[in-house]
Amino acid sequence: MNTKYQTSEDFAESLVKGRIAETIIERLFVENNFTVFHYGMENTIPNVMKFLKGKNDEVSQRIRKLPDLVVWKDKKPYFIEVKYSKNEEFPGQNIKEYIDYPYQNTYFILVSKKHIKCISYNELKAGKVITADTSNYLSNIAELNLKKETIIKYCEMAEKFYKNIT
Image 1 (cartoon, one colour):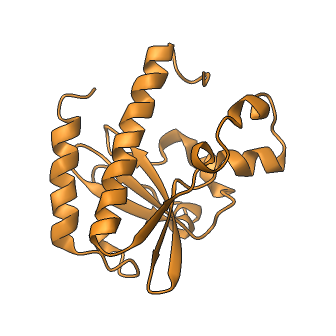
Image 2 (image 1 turned 60 degrees about the vertical axis):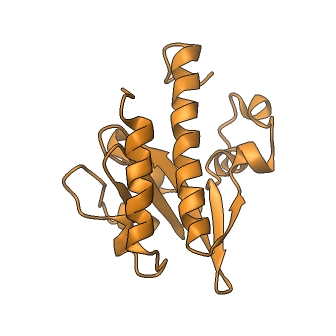
Image 3 (image 1 turned 90 degrees about the vertical axis):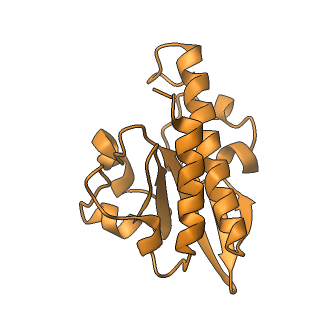
């Protein structure tokens, strides 16, 4: 269990929230005609966590930080890291963790009860963040060319699933 969680139930709940967010984003991209591959360490190297415990070398860190998804459209791939936040903040106090993020062409997509927002690695490195007051909506990422109506549909789905989550 990760040390940032008080109990195994906290860890399990966080895992479920994150998996819901990943599924929402996966389906959003599929509906926009992207091919989606699950990528993160839990998908590419299952059970590796037991070997990484206590290790802090560069390779171990890179494995831990593998983006969740690779999405592909028009012969162009994109790394996608999906996060859930009840208060619409990313990366919050963990900004130092992302300054040296090894996959520098990653888009970080934040799913919350109200919005789906996005920030690139370069924006994070420049000191930008996502908060409830920022307007970095996923629909503003021209390179991805996602249909706004699809994003709204999946925002509504996220609101439905996370409505009673604390």
